Length: 176
Image 1 (cartoon, rainbow, N blue to C red):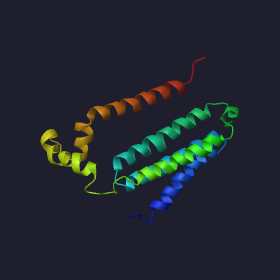
Image 2: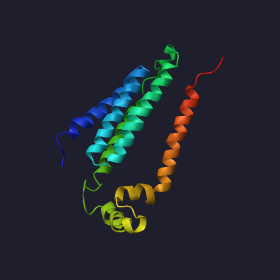
Image 3: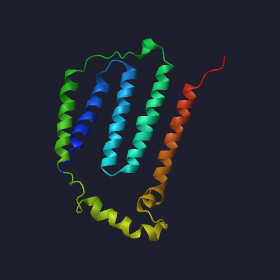
Image 4: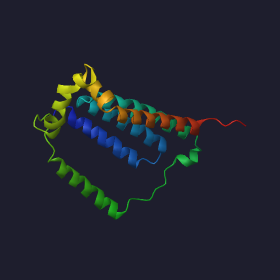
């Protein structure tokens, strides 16, 4: 089932991604990528993955855009122009074919919300039935993120923290 907001949102997402590729100025590219990330966070929110939407909005649209812009503002203006050759013929053939192949493969995915999909049949019932007994956490989403997948969540947090420290070290002012 396609909702009236899905097609325009997907078109906006594709337009901003294509625009970020084709512009010649890095600042414009960064702003378009921030816009792309914002539209993508809306897609995640409308699909019901609010936690993923929040992370995309904070890290993708917010933090990444600000850090890219801070880096560009400390760069010589002559270095912010993109100089790239036109795409090769192989690129213009291979990537559209890959896109068509991915769309063809996506037709084999289960329908959105299908109660008979593998995720709904195999692992979800286990989480829903046993999460409180295993974790003593009343919220199933919290128990999955913080108890069942806590190591994965910790490593993701470490990666974001290390990225922030690396950016802070790269952007610091040097004492003269």
